[in-house]
Length: 455
Length: 151
Image (cartoon, chains in turn blue, cyan):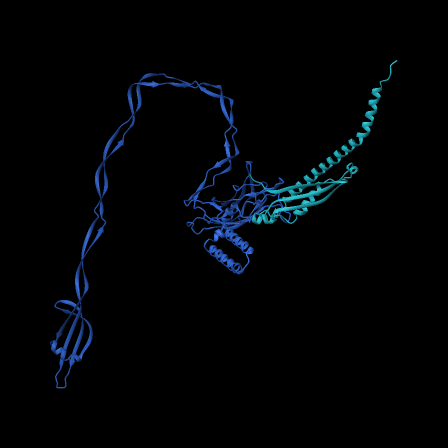
């Protein structure tokens, strides 16, 4: 029997394998034992194991079909900062230049005034500043606008209900009421008030002779005069005269007689051009294409959705080994994603994956460092649901710490990071001693083929 | 007058006789050494061929099964590999013939722990023929196993 502890541990990591392995062990045991009981067990045991497998599949579908080997960096539920900072090429003005000495000339004014004059006796005109205050009639508006109250009487109709009989009493009317005829609605005056009344008349000549005549007024409306008070704004006013005062300029020239100063001052215009040196700036500034870092970004809802990864084969080998068809061994990868946009706030655009970056970080043995293999790094047509396929060859064998990273970049800047341990197998052969070895046959690392992760 | 030394002449005669007697023995001894040395040299060559063929055969696993299940099951052509590499590493010399080439897989093809290759050869003798030994038979054995690249 080839079962050992290491193998058991590895197999028990997976429900599917453990169920099948137990089945195989029992089957081997039964093959060695013959008899009726063994035959019965050979029929029932597959049925029991199939039932257990199906039941487990129902409760743990993910574990049975793929396991939880696929990990994802869960984005936080808070809005995330989408950094769109970037380098941009802008035209930046570069201040540049130099000073030059320029020879110039400036006018130096040496003009001067000769002040002189003399006193004279005689008539001379002088400007006298003066003013006086004079009254005048001005007008101002006196506003007499006011509210005026008006009282008026309006006839209104008031409902009443009473009856008045003429020519009989209430008994007599009741006796001959069969002969009463409605003659219409009439306006009548009763006790000095105006009413509207329905008028009924009995004009009956009985067979015994004579005449019975009576009138009944049924008053239904009374006309009543009511007082109405109303106010209205009356605009009115007038211009009122009043006495105002104004200052009148009475300045004037006066001819005076006496001693006065006659100014005979004059100005002598003179000057010359003086050379001087001026320091002038010659601007040789220019625009230069410069890469500048533009900080920008925005807050967005984190991505939610599902990623599935299919890997083939389950155990990956380096390219230096050939498969059954003679091709280099490698790994085929299919990554599917489905972004859930149903929870997006109104107005936020639908999130789509626009770039996929897949690479393998192989941790080499004997501390030889890590080897990075880029499997796919390309922009794709933005899509909320999509998939990519890639085939990759690996140069070096790597331990179970080797990780395959899958980055899905959304158009709006968010990133989903899915990763899983993906050891790369390699082998060689050695000679051993004549006595042989008790070491178990080699088994390779890996075994994952389908994984699913939600984020 | 000096008389020749009669003892010296006697000694020369003895050496001649001794040489005549021992020379065949000496030549026979040399022939044995040569033939047995050749046998050892051929044995080393066969041993090397066994080891190389065992080592190369150990690598002949069914890679498709290995990719699916992670097991190092041997492929069907491992026997061809043994033959190929064994004879590639044997010099085509005269007076030398391979009498048998055998191999076995320890445990099973599904779980091969290691492969043993056994070979037997006959070497025709040159000098030992004189003593009636026509040929020397040599046997050799080599083992090889698969080794996963790891720490």
